[in-house]
Image (cartoon, rainbow, N blue to C red; front, top):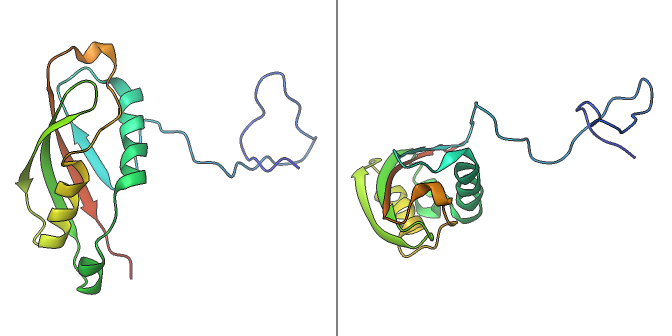
Length: 138
């Protein structure tokens, strides 16, 4: 049974008059609806950004304490990492107003091993700003 709403790929046949429905994750494009943003001058490219997005989705969390107190907001850290993914430092740049949210973002990167960067990033440490928008849906 084919459940996709996307056009069939070249060479594949869809049943006439039958819509295709995809239950998988959408492909990333120019529009990014992620609750976070990344800012860097390094030549990391969209592929690494997408891999980092997946890594963040797998490792980030909304702190229970902040949720219980109804806290939400945006926080930003400056992360310095080696191209192999080893995080060298994490510094808080903008606080959200919630110590729980700030600690959660800082802890996400502190001591972490991020996905390795492409060769175009070079062999020197790379610094980027990462903003997380914590949104509490009630």
